[in-house]
Length: 275
Length: 325
Image (cartoon, rainbow over all chains, first blue to last red; front, side, top):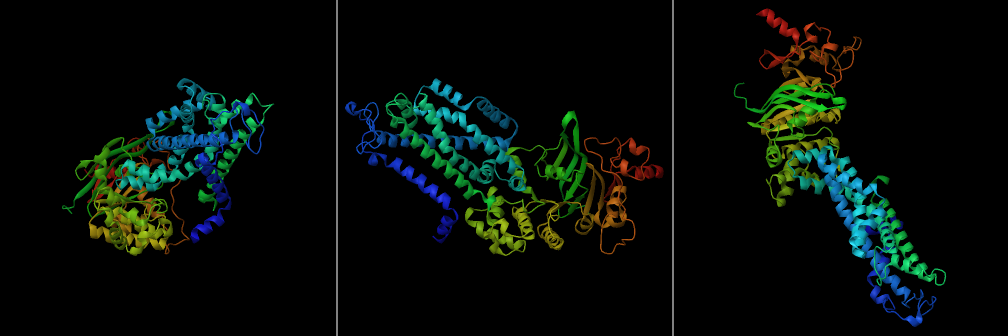
């Protein structure tokens, strides 16, 4: 307990962003309880209402409550962004470790694959993949994962290369350690802090990419309340009913900013070198 | 002497590294060495002479381009996979710099018992007691088992390094300049410990070092390397006045000690060591040798037996030999 208190004192900024992020996650989890209306319930008589006491964020062209839709939308966007980040973190790290540890043809194959991914602008490639697979939130997740794992693979590879030839890894080999054991016990702990920090900072970025894909029509499909797609829907009414775009946009902004700041402060916490 | 048990023999080992422009870097040239149980062989030479490459091959961290390494009757030069892993229990190593030799995220007891667990020699539940025994073997308090490497001094860590190398009771321990990163005062105790443990466990030690004074104190035999070649192998008690190769003599001339007369000029060899990318034809030492002859520029001298356990590769002595006949 004493330790925990000093930790809080030392990392005030981190605690602040961590609690904000936690709050957002809580809201997302409790959405069905908090949301005042069904996000799919259309009421054409009450379409395009201004924000009021009854509908805090107003209603859209079908008379659906935007506040409820933003809540549900954040939930979907965040869940998808987390999924993407977890997939690319695990897959990218694994590829990077293998590539860095074994070198030779394994390295060549993995790195050339990642070069191919990098050679295209990420969004264009994601659009192509999503276009081939068909538009849905699941395919958008797959598309963005395919495009984004390379960054993690490269980072893991360079971190592994840094420790690959240190004496204690040779020592592990000489003392008869099996390769999977060395990868797990020696390579993984060395790359994990940096990878987790990157992943935390990337949550916001991935949400933007997903929202971008949905905005372009390659992600979530109506009537799903997804923040990017809601922006797209609101575009046509921007001048008459700006709240259709303002509130989903604000939601994206707030979530992305908080997760970015969380990632940054997490780096300060985990990075021992700065002490 | 005849009942000495041969544990490791290196036969005609050559290691070339490909370099740019289609050239090769000759790190080891036709090395022949033998290591006997209970004996210490020191490999001496200046930086870049190929000592570490040789040691990496003996530990199967690298493979020779040519030649064989026979350990306990098995050629280990090209072992792979599980066979290689099983062989590793015969040869262990003490590293040069104890600051980098341990995983900083592991406790001492896990470091010490890792080799034992790797070979299934103990159970997980025995780690605590076994780690204590090993620490006491190297004269450290058993309580160190729960420390991390960064909580220990260099000398203490090097003792842990020795304990780890001996944990699985290998036949051979290679020490890569195991004392050079330590304070002089600590060096002596580490050497004494090694010698004591060698007697107790009857192991062969291969000790890499560039301090020729240390060699004469702790080893049984010494092999002097120059530019990837072994130029002289001699019993340690002959180092001081029995050295024959001009390079060994030059090394001896470079020892500093308290009683030396500083008014005299310190002997040193002129010029730089040639690049191993571009080894001259003939004797590798020709450019720096003050007794260089015609033949030295044409032929690389082979090791010739001068006395029991004493071999020299130098044309000075091939000549006299021929004349004797």
